[in-house]
Image (cartoon, rainbow, N blue to C red; front, side, top):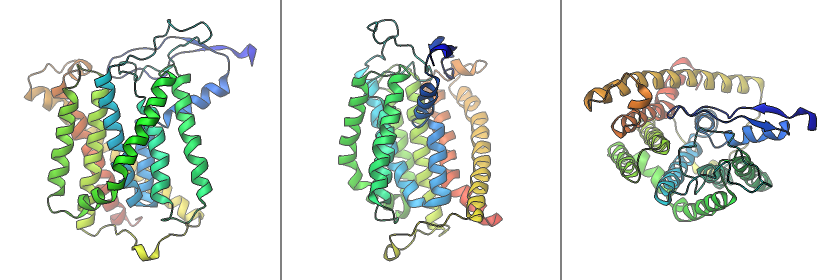
Length: 350
């Protein structure tokens, strides 16, 4: 209400630049929290949880293929940002009718166009419906409602947070549709190759690494390059893990003649088992991530002779940031599709 205008500080400091947000007056708290939540639908923590849940509990095939499409879209989006170099909207230089304050500084050091949040917020629901409709039994109406709701919430939240102009959002949306139109028909082919080709892991690792190095040559250092390495690392790890899982016949995809799959009944046992899998798996993933972080940063500093006393400064060197993000998230991805399902099998909750 009008009397409830309290101050808020920008959410989440940027871990790499240490930038703090500016205080802002919020007059509509429900809207503020709705958009804070919606903007999370485009952040890495949400993806990790979303992909994990799909791969461990619902349908590994859909999870894997979602990741393939997501990596492609996010990579192209981040690289395009670094090529176009369109700055983010500036806080004080807006018309008086639109007082803009940046409510989030996590991505402030990246460029603005196209909005990668808008791209992921469009990619995930569209791809999800394309992959699951006809594979699972549910009315198409659910998909038709999910896509615009999800996409609009993420896009509007980015404008509300002061991170994007309408142009950034529209560009992101249209760019995504273009990428999906060109690449989506091949995801089946790519997934089968990843799983069955003898040298798939070598090709996956080499290709993702080459793409990472290419992206680092596009622009001087910015946090978006760490994000690119993280996205490519996760994608490579998930693909390699699914290759090993497939070759060991650890998880078998349901045969095409029993499709579409009925929606499983949600009983207390099913729910408890799903939660147990997520908690166990997340524990493993966090341990792997922390171990790799502790190893890769000092190791990269040592190899490339970069002082390691200030980690934030060290991570501003490509020679540290690329191996750290790529190897750490590569192992996280590998754990998601191989190590964790193996542990589930071992302790009897698969």
